[in-house]
Image 1 (tube, helix red, strand yellow):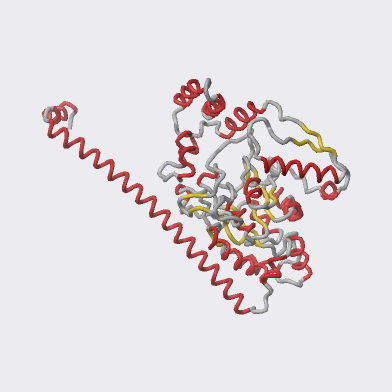
Image 2 (image 1 turned 135 degrees about the vertical axis):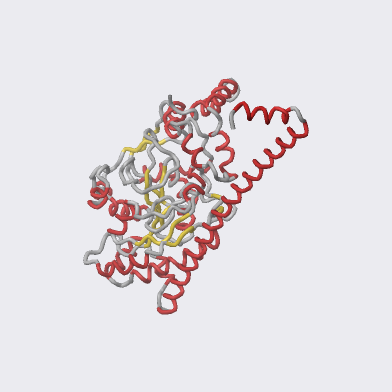
Length: 448
């Protein structure tokens, strides 16, 4: 139909109020229906993900129950009470079998997740990995150690959701480099753990798998974004976990759950095979790292990871092995510390923790030097916030299109998706009253 003919048909209609009202109402109804259909589709995807999780946990429970029936003499409580270093020794000398350790932790992980909702998938390939261990001539540094893996780290045959509908259904065809290295060292990845939606949050909740609780106090958060790891390890359901950390995502859950965690130096461990809703981040580098109950476990894990296999699989990782000599040295150190950074107000308990740690280190013969971080406002606003959201959070907002935003993330998301011009205008208006918020809004515009 030509444009002129179209206008001839439509022109009388625009003059009829009833027809115009009908057109507007039908258009509005169509929009409502489309939104409802989209929302329903999202809900169906989330329900399917939950069904998949439930089936995986049922499979895990059956495997643990079967082993328990076939091996009634297994001393589960004794296995779970050992430190990781002790466990490795007993596994290597043969006084404990990898089967008894794996299935003991599988059973305990199921108990913990029933209480705090921290496990979102069972890595069923762990039983195949168990059989492969028996055929290996050399026992790796993590021989027979069950390891829990944060949701967004790829495991072959499983989904890395990032807590978002966007990534559901994308089954990974191969393990991430870190999982490959763990397996080469004899470790057995056995579960994946919960995270907050997008992982840019210090709680641990998403609308797919729900809220994870702190096992030490169910009224509290386990922290985030490696909150599922923190909850599972603190509850006794895992002895070693792999998390990730950009701005505290290993360190905060470790603190909240009474654990030890390490964010290694940037690029120390390969990040190949890890899902992220944010790209870039050159001035603030995200890093994978271990979480455990004690420092020696972290050291053993790092020693195992920093190996030739890691350097071969990812040539961008500097080929620097773990320095055992430096770690075991008793030579006094000169350590800088501060009780407050001049930007965030520490709680009284935080100050006490710093003071107590300082005294312990001084009593051990180390020199403690107080200092104030320089240019803290510039560091937080320009290097940190603008460094993470260099694109003005465009990629993050795009990842959440066609998704339902978790209430814990809603206020953040509403700020992220504001147009850059609106952010700049708000920053100018708020600068005299709330200068810090104004700087944050300006930094969230990104670079360029």
